[in-house]
Image 1: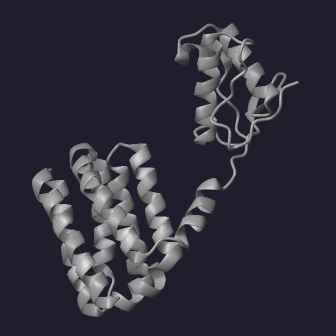
Image 2: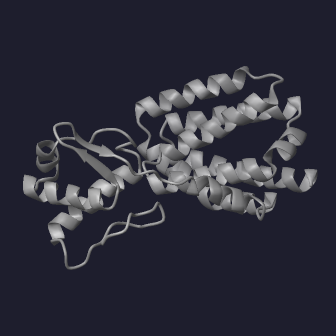
Image 3: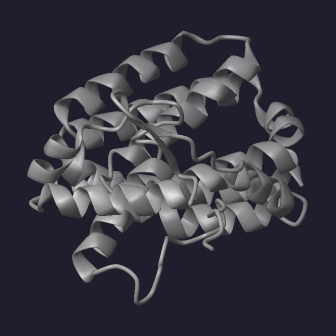
Length: 242
């Protein structure tokens, strides 16, 4: 008798019981469900649609759906279709919580030094015009902030995440979001508020405008050089305020 999968399971494997093509379809559908492309309580596309999309026979899709149902990932309702019942656990948030207590401001800056130059480089190359436009809107909101430090911090995070998502690399963007969340939970509120004087807010507003212009003009060298210099300044500020 098979057991239900949990959110810790990397996939669904029933060796010797299903064919390789069925396994591929199972893995593909399960990955979409785990990523919430197919969200809980929503109906999956029809067998015919999935077969055409995946380039397999309907019988293959039907067998894959049988496997997913046996693992309590979906529920098949005759005459209505297949519905997602799988619920992922809040593992990512728990991971951020657990890492936050062990992450110092310097630790976080080291991670930023590793990630941000490559994130900016890829963003310059891969950001779509729509993404650049969305970034411009966030920058306008940042430039409008005068005294609301919480709003400034939230918008600053949003800007960085937009750049990370603009890389086109979902794994890299996810790693960066975890870094942002860890920073927020561990020490950001106290440290960031302490460092954000009105003069520094104005300085950051000018810096982010420079970064935006480099990304919008697709100037890889200028954007990467800027973020490296910015990180050096952040380190000096951290040591000064520490």
